[in-house]
Length: 79
Image 1: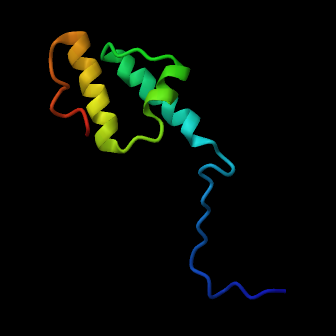
Image 2: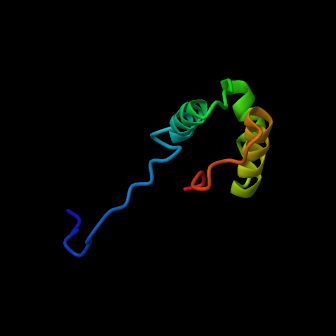
């Protein structure tokens, strides 16, 4: 038997291994963006945004929002 009494905690990193959280993340992001009028289908969203840095992602969304509304993204958008 192995003595585990000296171990205080075990950390499980399930992201991408047991749970494909990217699919959930994309679905939630698309839903929230749709509330602002920015509608993307799965294929378009993945092709345009997955893999971008945060700065490039926000810049692309800002441009789409400007094109759609003629206005800037809300000041608290990134938050």
